[in-house]
Length: 414
Image 1 (cartoon, helix red, strand yellow):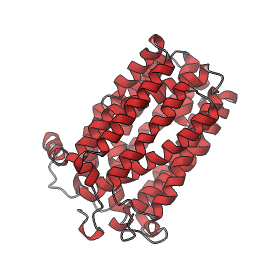
Image 2 (image 1 turned 60 degrees about the horizontal axis):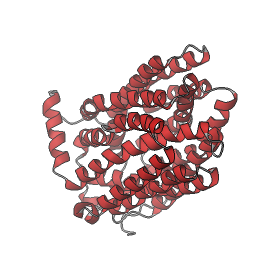
Image 3 (image 1 turned 120 degrees about the horizontal axis):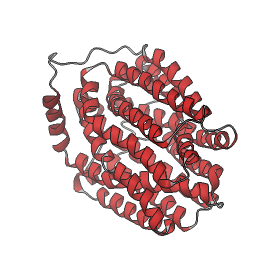
Image 4 (image 1 turned 90 degrees about the horizontal axis):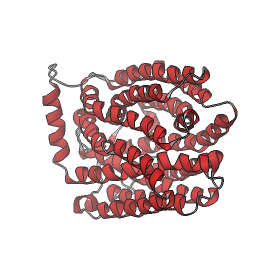
């Protein structure tokens, strides 16, 4: 690691716009930290079958994939804070509808699929805007610190959120977790209005296909970029299928783990992320992608353990290690993107990253939902863990990935 790019103290908080964005983002992460677990068990409460859960998750991902390229163009053309605010309004409607249906016991799988699709479409606009706005909010030398601070909050709430969600779901029901998320989104919208940024640079003419072509050119001209995205095309399909579908199913049906135990496992993953964010706030990654791919490969450990012996303590320890490794990748990837891609094209390039990373995820959820009805879940998970590790470590040895270093602050492209 190098000290040359290190930011003193919490230097990123010296930027007013970043402070307001950080507050709004922290609120949404805190209040939304229980929603994924609550949604999973809400679906299984309606129909205790893995295929039903996989259908809901697939609907979210399909909508995300369909709209993400358009979301990237919009985020580069319009004020990104405004794009995020508008999407939060749409989220309020979909999350509110889910909460109402759960409270009234009128929720059905087809309706949950439709509402998940609405939420997925909204996320397709939010994620490119989030990725593109951070370089506008802070200075180049504080990019890694700003990302680490956001990850710190995300991981901190991930520690407590799943545990609280597990308790809340088993006592009061999943609808109350949705209510908490609604409160957060309502609070974040006016706070984001305090972010004041110059309007996007452009010629004023909107051409969807021309803008997409520019984004594609920027994306495909960087071998490190498409190599990692191609790897995550498969790795994310494994993650969402094995961890997102098989994990809750085992938790609900295997007494060695249980719903509350699954909450502890997910929280342990958050502890790993939290500890690593503290390190990355002060020590910049000298080789962000090399270390990132090696770090993300650690997810194979809890995945394999979940299949071989789903005991709470063992899987939680493995998840903690995986969380630390995931944060190394997340921070390294964000910094590599923000340092090497022009800011006015960053949302579009990010949308291609997201499209490639997400496009196979619907297949992953459906395949894994089907697989565990036809094969031993333990064999499925152990095999998936081995495949995940091979892909992650193999990608680290791609020359442009292995050699990728940091860009000095003075040369960061804006």
